[in-house]
Image 1 (cartoon, rainbow, N blue to C red):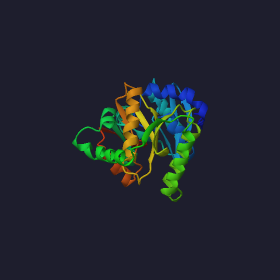
Image 2 (cartoon, helix red, strand yellow):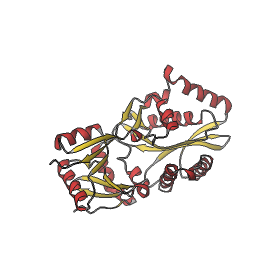
Image 3 (cartoon, rainbow, N blue to C red):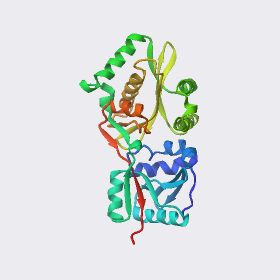
Image 4 (tube, one colour):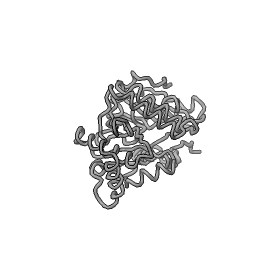
Length: 302
């Protein structure tokens, strides 16, 4: 029987090496996201063989992430299947990639049914493209930034440090008030996750940047390295009434990423959660690829 336990901060020490070995591209296969969203999705973790296994519960539906690590994944999947059986619930794998799906089809040719999770697809961009915004397709982004610079000649970019972290949190609180976070269930859940990112910023080894105008923070972003070639942006907030604020924090932080991580090729800006406005905004940057995610449900062949 798998001995799952609630995920805690000190689990980072054994979980991160397993995630690094797996080198997955989905933003959910990341310790910060597992830890920060642990209350919303009731995440529990365990080590099976040389793999991390994560179990979640959303609205009464139990599910697992695809095992992350190295070795014989079939044996681990069989243990997960047994765990589901022992606990009298369906065996569901959530957020699996096309590569995970191909492996499942080889191991279980007739047992899984698959369903695309479009609202959870990650938007992935070439870092160089976000840093330069070159080309006709991104002309509108350059125009927004030009307007921002013209309207705010005293703007500046800073890296987030312990000295300005509290100011960023105050800006986040103001953003939530303006966007009525308390009236939207998903925004409430995101607020809790973002709060964890701030509370454990140093312990989670997070990084970030901010934009000031006349000394006041008007935008900030938080992220970290995701895998061998991708950086993930967990949080990006800007005041919507300041034209170009979102565009300039995006560009300036990616420029910082490229300077500090010259081997990074892609930036994963996570999913749109089904919000039409967010989907439109992320598509407007013309992603170079989508990190597709699927639900796989196990059925016994009779």
